[in-house]
Image 1 (spheres, rainbow, N blue to C red):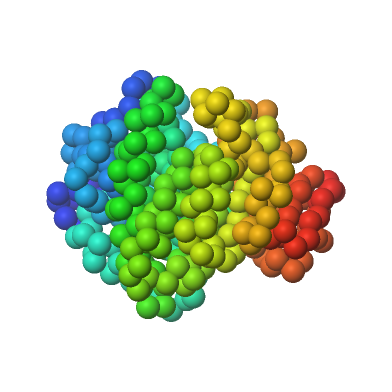
Image 2: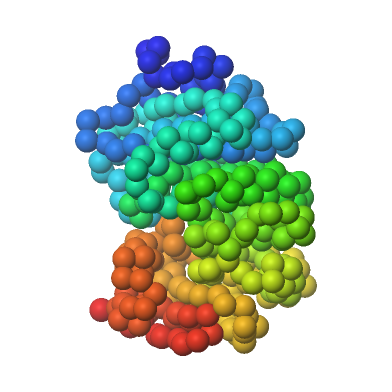
Length: 362
């Protein structure tokens, strides 16, 4: 391996990434020395509460002591299809057709993360996005998914990936929920530090159980009564949130008012959230809510993507459905005032219980 691929700091060993935790068949990093001609690259800043396993870059399902920080560079193949992660089909990696890890560097604590984020912003005013992955996700899967989303949405601002200690096992639901609660303080501290950073416009995106973790962290900040101003957030988006609807209302009440805009993407045919509901004695999950009266007065924009289901679990349509990605990119470009004129769908949108629109197919 060429020396310049390692980037500064020898402690961060790219070769260790190939041994990333997870049983056979699960996604794991493919390491390449360089990206292929025509491939793009997506940089992610990482804060993780996972335990290193077995080397600094290879983080597994164990729970670490505090946070580690890193900068990773992911190569996106020129043949990439929107909504897809092109995993290597075998042991060999071809950056021309596969996602690949082409750069890695440890960062020196939260200050090192902030300095790196600040340096990456340049002179622009792009939003910094903090993404929190969901249940049953290993380290590589979370990193690649975030890289894919940032690339597909054309996000030019800094991307921060918060990786908490998911067991990455279908039957690890209780372990994952406990891990999310354990990571709550670490995420709250990270958000508070980023919000206080002058000139940094922070948006937070949480998926599935990661949305539950986001709400718990925001609640923790509100309870601390420190000087953190959550109204400085550029926005919050919860995608397929795995949160009991009553719990969500209680969390929201602790915040006094939710940061704006506050977007919740739901799908009533989300199969994984239906299972979660059954495990919770039939309690409605926020990500499958149908009766919007349950969210009355909270100032939430609800995007119902049920009809964009792609025949799978329908658990991450804004990240895996090309139609959903096109819709949301359109909403970002035209602004909320023009939402009723968007014609990708059919998708039901409720603007903070102020007005609703049903968007028909072209």
